[in-house]
Amino acid sequence: MATGSLTIDLDALARNWTALDRASGPGVETGAVVKADGYGLGAAHVARTLARAGARRFFVAVAEEGAAIREALGRGPEICVFGGHMAGDTDMIGDLDLIPMLNSVEQLTRHFEALPGHPFGIQLDTGMNRLGMEPAEWAAVRDIALAAGPRLLMSHLACADEDTTGFNGKQLATFREMTEGCGVPRSLSATGGILLGPEYHFDVTRPGIGLYGARPFADAAPVVTLSLPVIQAREVEPGEAVGYGCTWVAGDRRRVATVAGGYADGILRYLTNRGTLWADGHPCPILGRVSMDLITADITGLPRMPDALDLIGPDQSVDDVADIAQTIGYEVLTSLGARYARHYTGGTGP
Image (cartoon, rainbow, N blue to C red; front, side):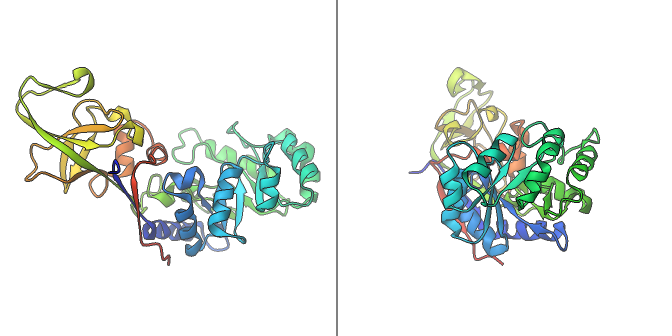
């Protein structure tokens, strides 16, 4: 028996892409970020669904992820690699027509020497200090790079989801200064940037987390349901403890269910004595520690013994779980483990 049932609504995924494509505006190409195994939901299923929805440019973190997307989609769609042209990636980039987003003079040199004439893009650092060429570095190689015809110039916003310092505007101004007059398609916005408005959209947008049903895209259709099967239930008497470390002790008589799932499945340990599982609209507080394979929850108020309890579903979103665990929806999704029985619904695309 699998530890749980993870259901992915591919039609909802397609609807989210269509909505973000519409928000990107006319004349703007909407790509799709499918890194980290499609944000934990299965890169092949996700990429094929988004391609049917209309995406023609996909973004991954490293070349190996690009290889998986190429296998799923075949030739045709562009696959851009955020990590650029790393040492040892030459054959994979060349053979699979991947487009590295070159991040440094070192990568530019490697790419031009190893794969002359092969498509590439450039990633620019506009203040995040993570990936990309800084303004001085870009100025030194700009003419050489532009003469070779890059497919895309891109940068990444550090505070698109929540900007309390005006940093988005500073990055926007820097990006314009670094790219004006280049005559190359430009991209600055992921999901959060799309929602900031047209001045951030440029030629290509790169929605990621919003496709998968999480913030900052408040209007996203839910994509994921995670149900955990109940293995056993027992009565717990006043004064009895539940779980490792005896961190929860019953104050009165409780009925407690043990479900299959734990931190080995990406269910964050921080939910210990804080999180809630759900049964058809009824909350079932987590009692005691989230352990490697098991979680215990209070089902005292349920009218009947449930077959399963939901961690993510109609009563509790990915973002709700993230808020309780003091993290973000990205971590909740990409932590989902390999032991779940995965079920894909829909997927015919619009």
